[in-house]
Amino acid sequence: MMRMLRAFSRIFLIRQGIVLILAMSCVPGLPQTRQPQARGDVPLAAGDYRIAGMVVNAVTGEPLRHATVAALTEADSHTVASVESDNEGRFALEQLPAAKYQLTASKRGFRTAFYDEHEDFNSAIVTGPGQDTERLTFGLVPGAVLRGVITGDGGDPVENARVMLFRKPNTHKLGDRITQVDSAITDDTGAYEIGNLAPGEYLVAVTGEPWYAVRRNGGNRPGDETTAALDVAYPVTFFDSTTDEESATAMVLTGGSHEEANINVHAVPALRLVVETPRKQDGSIARPELRQTVFGSVISAESSGFVLPNQSGSTEFTGIAPGRYELAQGDPPRVMDLDATASEKVDPGQGTPTTAVSGVLRAATGSIMSGETTVLLEWVDGGHHEQTAQTTATNGRFSFSSVPPGTWQLWADRGGRQLAIESITTGNKTHSGGSVTVREKALSLAVNISDGATRVEGFARRDGKGVAGVMVVLVPKDLTAMHALVRRDQSDSDGSFGLRDVVPGEYTVVAIEDGWKLDWAQAAVISRYLPKGIAVTVNDRPGKALSLSTAVQVQDR
Image (cartoon, rainbow, N blue to C red):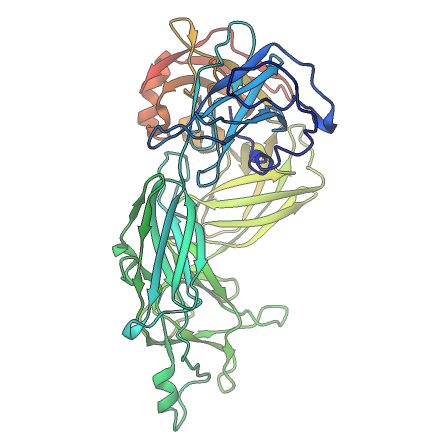
């Protein structure tokens, strides 16, 4: 079952609204379960079922006492019942109605988790006749800690340095890339600490400003030698104390580990970049924007450079540390990757021309969608361009003024719900999914939104028995449209699954045990499982569920 994003915030509120302690007989030594509640503090009808088991340290296997375990409703992640584990780590949620529940656990020093969690998915617990829900082992992973000290020349501590933590992808989700997950500011001793981290492979980068740095504007002037010597900057520096992004050393954090990443930064002469600043057709200045990138993510942006008084039409960026930047300049903007190693005047003809991308969002009926919708373009080709661009579609119409050439994936979100993009029409050509190829000419798109509320339901079974924790994948017949049309879920304790927001079309459903480590997004890989999958045709059934009449055979990875 897909994890509800709102559930995390609810986990810490599980004690709210539960004001009546249920008097009942229970297993000796177990704390009593709080009475099941529904929204508005209206008690649910008591049932005859229980969810019980043990909470353990997922790394050592040691039982965890006083961990809070909660059962949440599947529909809206509302807390139904909660309990604390006893001194042996045992827990029991008593007198539950027959239903499907998300199960969460939390304890200080451990990462809050859903039961049998994988990526953005987990297995719900199904109570009812014939369901074994009393021998669960709920493993919590202790949070990892990364700490260190940032020092400058001579070993002096660097205060107020920004330490950025990036995580390398450890899944095979479409569009996975290195992403920034956390940051910290150093104290007056140069120390920093980032805690409660998930296991994984991380990269560390640091930016900062020498406290004694003096900035110069407008170029060299007589008697400026002293100031010039102090016009210095710290380049972005990576662990283990290198300024070369490609040479950054990755750190592997395991559950509960405490690792140290000390980084030494060196001040170097700051650079000056002079960029042509033409005027737009409306007479306003087309100011350039200088964006600094680390692992493809923009970490800073500046568009207020010093306008040179004797060189009208030019802007000077000063105090620039050597490193990798993305520069947008001109009208229409041209975007260039800039590996700044020396002061220079940037050739206005350099860079790649960007293109305007506009369009309309059309509902399944063909009418233009009303209201406001968030539209997002996500970079697919890789490289160091800014990875996403976002705008708001008002009454179905949206526009991006400057999009670099390449392949992008378009997403639409309305009220926190991702809309299903069935196809995109450009000119007289229509293709499935939300892929957009940007070239030299401006693009006008008709984005066809499916109601996409169809839910494909079924069971993953082996030898006639439901299998929990299995990765279920809805694979489109057109494998080139995987990025937009694929849907995934994790089977629940009875083997049931539900694939949400499915766009009309032809698909194959496959169930793969321990498939989370599989590079399933590759067509050659997922194709191996298709022959034993279940074919399904989804018609436009907004708000309805399509139940598979045949169970999906669980296949080994």
